[in-house]
Amino acid sequence: MNFDFDAAGEVRFLKMNELEELRMEAYESSKIYKDQMKKWHDGKIMKKDVSLGDLVLLFNSKVKVFPGKLKSRWSGPFKVMQIFPYGAFELWSEEGGTFRVNGQRVKRYYDGDNKGPVEVLYLGEPLPEGETN
Image 1 (cartoon, helix red, strand yellow):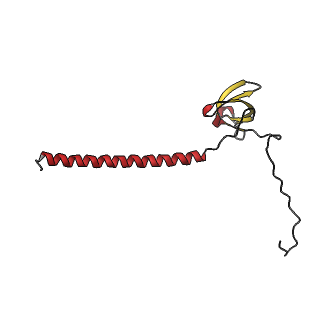
Image 2 (tube, rainbow, N blue to C red; image 1 turned 135 degrees about the vertical axis):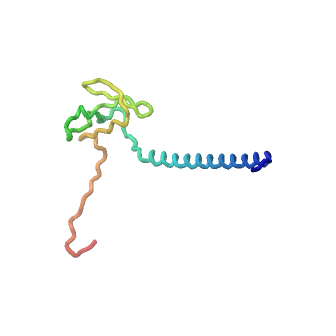
Image 3 (tube, helix red, strand yellow; image 1 turned 135 degrees about the horizontal axis):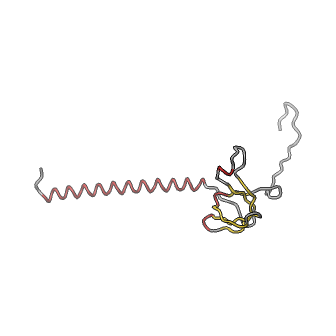
């Protein structure tokens, strides 16, 4: 046993500093891991390309509303009347008027007139057997 209080206090102080350094290393490691996971998660989130006046479909997660397995859980189309900060949408329907929903529950509705640019690829005549281009 060490009865020298100054030496024992110094050893105790060094051990406490070492413990504090280990705690700070663990904190830094945790922060780096969380930043990497946030970057990975944010990279997987798909941006919504919905603007005012677009038609969208609404996901209905209530299983009781759709008792059949093969029935679609998407209802609509609804018209986007307003886009709020943090991803909320105000939708309009003929039956129910306007209502607000979370932006994660909607996806863009593509009808025949609203498909966007179409790329056409023309193929030439096939080459006779054995010939190369």
